Image (cartoon, rainbow, N blue to C red; front, side, top):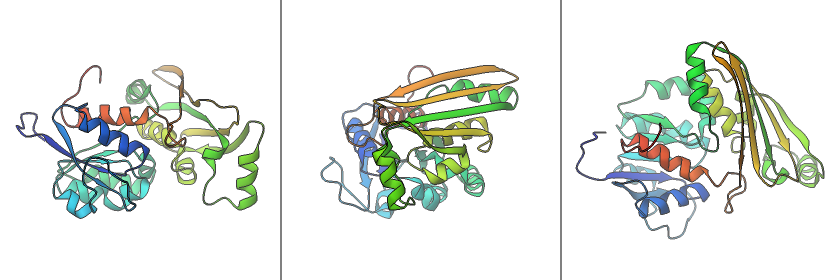
Length: 268
């Protein structure tokens, strides 16, 4: 995508939920200069978001860039096709790339470019730089969320009810980032993003805690290697529209979109 392009960049948003709807609304307000939303794609009716709701094939006919806000299945099924059409792709469902075959296919696809958004977490720049200096030897991600947001379709009814009804903090999962994003695809995108940045999903030790007293969604990251030792903690307010995600995520998506379309501002 040329930086000197005279026409606005046409953005298609896949997913009309809390994140996608917020991204569309912000683009309509001109938050990212010269990027205009032209369609939203969602199999469910999403109401009036200010742009047409189209099927994906029709939307891609108009797209310069696609913003994925719909879940891992879209990345699995359509990422390579979108990139091979010469359309740029911004991915929010990073967990899909825990599959090494898909990750390799996405890396190899083009001429469209892809970018992963940081979403609900920070510190990825220093982790990426540290991993580039030399392999990290320890990476830990501990995420704490409200119990009800962690109930998954694969849980049986008694397990789901125990999770909803817990009155104390309880560990729900412990394992690597690859397994974490398979079992909790909408709740542990942060772990997947860290795994991608450090170049090793299996190295990242993930702990997921359900805490009924958690007013904020907390992500604590600890890493060390030849470059040094790092520890940081992120506490985000949940999205009012969807408590499974953090309210900051749409704004992270918009910042990433500005970088992908050649219109960044500030530190990158």
